[in-house]
Length: 563
Image (cartoon, rainbow, N blue to C red; front, side):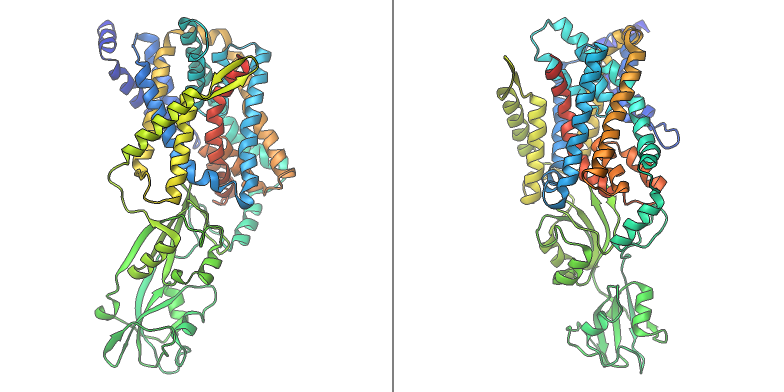
């Protein structure tokens, strides 16, 4: 142990990486589908090693990692953050602000009532509201206070202690509330209510995880028999003869020649037609007696599958049915999936497409490329990050955070470099959705910033908090448990009532929105499991961007309020 302690003291990076690795293993352990997550796991692992070993941690390295994480968060939620404020999304924006605000004020009142110091109060907030980034913003706010350095370090250590204590109920309590208590208070059956939403969206009921949407395309060739319903009809008429489906005639072989038909081309008996669509629909269209043929030349049609990032107004705000009817470039394009805020969105005729959505589309290569031009941009794999934009944006965020001050009575408090960097990432992410070539950063790189940056940061916080963890836990452990439960449940309860009876939100989507407002994906999964439907993600995606932004800044605000 002594030898290992000397090794950690000489090479502190070893302890940091060990805490991250062990933290991810701890976070992967789940009970009934719920766990503490990799970030809290890294914090606990850091506390464990910090309790036994003295590990010197660089404040500069810690700050750099946290700022990288904050930029990644802002960048990823930027497109949807400003989009959600427009149109009917304002109700979700209000809920996404209301829940963090109630959480902040509840944490403030509980901290004052229990007479907690600044560190315990900040950890109470970050753990009970399951927003670990608030640890960093609160730590920065404490470092800016005019108090001795030893006291600053003690308060920062207390943040980690309180966060670790409160996070467990913060996670379990939110899952229980969203999936069990909330539906009982609203007196709704999640399954029945979800069926109604699916019906309104034009979805067919299936089990969770199966998307009853436009299926992956198939191209098959048929010979049109004499007397078939499509004989004598134009291609345009034939393509629209089966209601509620999408089917396209891509090529025809007639008298030995292969050509691409125009909408006005009249179909004849004996034509070999290459059709793009679902197999059962193809049979309905050409008749069950139509023989399928193997014609390599006729079927040699290039098919493309792209991920299209929506930025254009022609699609944003429209339903899939409206897009299919009014956007001519959608002809020959099939939708396989929609991703919003890294969550899969259920697909139905009345599903509304929003700016920042990623559409997984398939069809003939010219059709898909034409559709991508009017929808936004194709997400071709980006191998290199725009580090020039990243570096300058983070610099600007730090600079603004350092010079902008907030008047608090007779005091003037800096905005903070962490909040400034978060706002810089938000603006870069949003501007990148408007100007597609600007600030391109691969999704994998953003994920690395968010996961590695925060895990390493909290691991270092834990290493510093380790020596005082046991004594601090004995001092205020049970008090934090009770106070944390109050801080977890109060914003959920008030958000439920406010969202249902003031904002008039659908109960299933509202429960998903509450999980999003506290950035807890496990809460969303619990609602989806109980409802046996994925539709709650529509509420989650409407609030999660606001939850990330405002809960993170709450770390700064609670220090300002209490100091």
